[in-house]
Image (cartoon, rainbow, N blue to C red):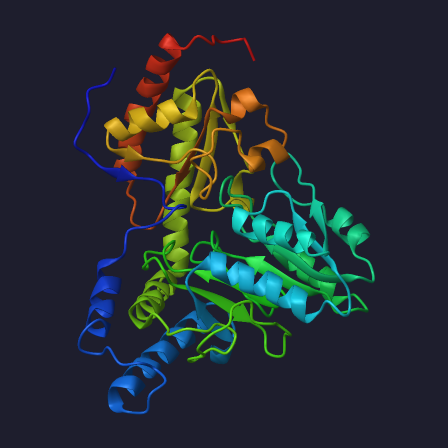
Length: 396
């Protein structure tokens, strides 16, 4: 086996990211010097309220929304729950039908399962072998009871950029009002988002995937979109989301968004170059690999996902970790499961191939030298594991 090395390469930015130095520096004063409660009128409170408003403005501008349409949450999971259940409850007198896809993040699928247990009807769209939903199937499923459609923007496992703008156009042309929610946790800061052009009514994002802190997310909610609160309690700045705001984390989210969108095109091009370098290197240096998801412009600039035949993904992950390289197996929120990923199953990947899947996710802070190191180590890891594997080439 390879001798462990000291170099550290973090390629699991789809799960979480390192907090940027500038973000941490922006947050620190709000733990001690500027610790006021944002609903109180004295100066410490107003200082906190102003900081929350600044973060709202930065995030709103990044998606072409209004400041007052940004509601802070603890993350995308809470934002998804508030959007989906909140809109379902608020519109249940008009209908009980919801449409989503089979490849959504568990934070959406679990909410839909909960609503099914409460009497709502949920249809799950199929996807093709690259992970794209079928727009014709979507149109066929919409009926007079349909109240909500929830589609993720970028698949956090295989990097597929779904046709969100096309879905928005379909809904815009309907005679009835069907609300549109988008989980953008994997696309925010990596793929352009314009809620007006895309006709999105609700959009979930999170800070910790763009080099912000954990525990801060946001829900964009279009003005006059009916939503019921899904939790009750003390109301501070946001009536739909009770509780005292995590001001330091919100400040950090605002700064992380500012950094992500200052030079956005440059950051995206940098990630694309690294993505393509890694993909080309894997395919040149390693035989018997299967790419999951599309190529080119319809793939997230940050995502690379391959199955390495005849080895287990967990073994690959552990041996890469011994050499200082952090990657993921399976989807971002279900890596402790032993069964094949629901996303890979939905796109038709056989279990024996799905078990060899590794996901690499990049950030703007990764370097070409790091990719060189990965392409030096990875082929050796795969070669060594295949040598001792009981499964040999040609068995599947």
